[in-house]
Image (cartoon, helix red, strand yellow):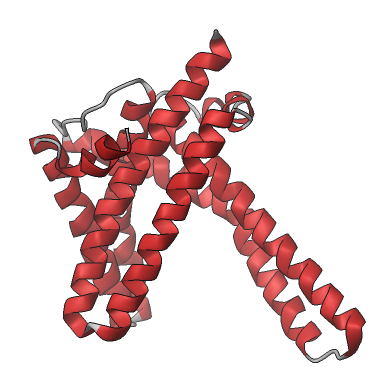
Length: 231
C-alpha cells in the first residue's frame, strides 16, 4: 500500500502529466512570490489555482476508489476544480489565519512579561494556536475532496465531513502522511539552506511529488472512511 502511494505520481502517463502540472504551478507561484513585487502577487493566484485543482481531482478520484491518476481531458474541468478548491482553502484558512495573527500579537506581548505566569500563558496561547491550525488542516482535505462531488458550497461543508473526520482510517492516514510530508519539508529546508539555486529547484520538485502522493493516500483513506460509515 505504501509503495503504491509512493509510486502514484509516476505510475502512468496521466500521473506524469499531473506531476508536471503541479511542478509548473509550484515553480510559477514561488517565482512570482520570490520577486517580492507586491503588485505581481495576484498573478501567483493563477498557477496556485491550477495546482489546487490537480490536488482536488486526485483527492476526489482516490476517494471513489481510483488507484491510478485521473486523466486531464478538459482544461475547464481542472480550472473549475481549482476555483472551487481555492474557495474551500480560503474559507478553511480564515479562522487559522486570524488565530495566527491574533496569537502572534499575544505572544509578542507575553514575551515582555516575566515570571511563571507569563510562561504559563505563553504555553497556553501557543498550544491554542497549534490546535486551531491542526484542526482546520485536518478537515480541509475532506472538504476539498467533496468539491469534486458536490454542486454547492452547502453540500461541500455538510455533515459528512464530521462523519469522515471521526473515522480512525482517516485519522491514521492523515497523521502518518502528514508526518511524512513534514519530514519532506525538513529535507527541503536543508536542501534550500545548503544547496543554493539547485537546492531550491530540487526542493520544489520533491515537494510537488510528495504533495501528489499525499493527496492520493489521504483521498484513499477518505473513501474507505466514507464507505465504512455508510455500511
